[in-house]
Image (cartoon, rainbow, N blue to C red; front, side, top):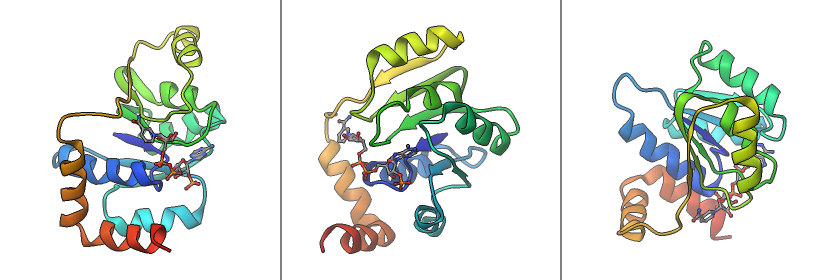
Length: 159
Ligand SMILES: NC(=O)c1ccc[n+]([C@@H]2O[C@H](COP(=O)([O-])OP(=O)(O)OC[C@H]3O[C@@H](n4cnc5c(N)ncnc54)[C@H](OP(=O)(O)O)[C@@H]3O)[C@@H](O)[C@H]2O)c1
């Protein structure tokens, strides 16, 4: 599983849940752009590997993920980037038949749909629904049970 924008607010939460869900044989990869962002992600213990790449450069991003996965790519890609023009990075790095979940509000339906068609990629694409039953309680419990998340979010977002 690959989380793009893994050091952001939503990205870290996705990594935390991915860690629980992938099972002993699953791998969680997080993408960041620089060393500053890589540090907290490494310390979190949620990811097995980190990909350092800019998601607006789809080909370079694909190369980085292909290298990190020995060419297998990701079964599930979750895009939590806050920037536009990152659709192709998510689509290219999902394996054929995989799933891309666009949580990012910067996602363009046109770019995603026509982009996947253009590169001949058969993936299931999901628009991130802002609501799911019990989401607030689930997320608060996630933060309550993780001292790491609680401390990091307090440090980052309450100053
Ligand atoms: N679907 C929904 O219901 C819903 C709800 C809330 C928010 N959202 C959307 O979700 C997105 C993320 O929100 P957030 O609060 O998690 O944002 P955030 O905390 O600002 O995190 C955004 C992440 O995107 C990364 N990023 C930015 N540009 C990038 C690029 N060119 N390549 C790779 N990574 C890049 C940043 O990486 P660095 O650490 O390297 O800067 C950062 O980690 C936003 O678009 C937001 O509007 C959706």
